[in-house]
Image (cartoon, one colour):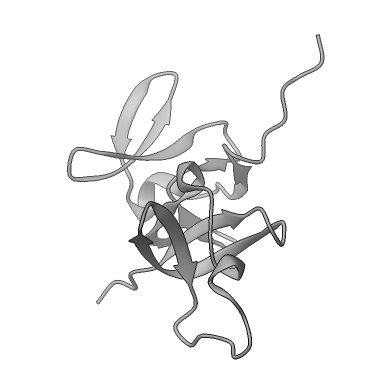
Length: 117
């Protein structure tokens, strides 16, 4: 069975959080399977636009691939209709392990800084 897990950026601690995703009263949270004692909900609050689901696939280096990740060939991982796809200049293609052979995660679309003009 595929591991269901999400990732989101926590602005308070300036870190990526991994775990289950929930919304409550307009706020968005990514929490580990086991809550750390003594932490507040703010320690788990994430920017909603950064939330992405684990695809169930890892790259050639063993790095888990999430929605919003960028691969070494410049393509990105997206969720479209009912599945994860690889998006590049040629279009959208199903995300299969065989489609990413020789590629690895180089970052994600949320960590990219604008190029200097």
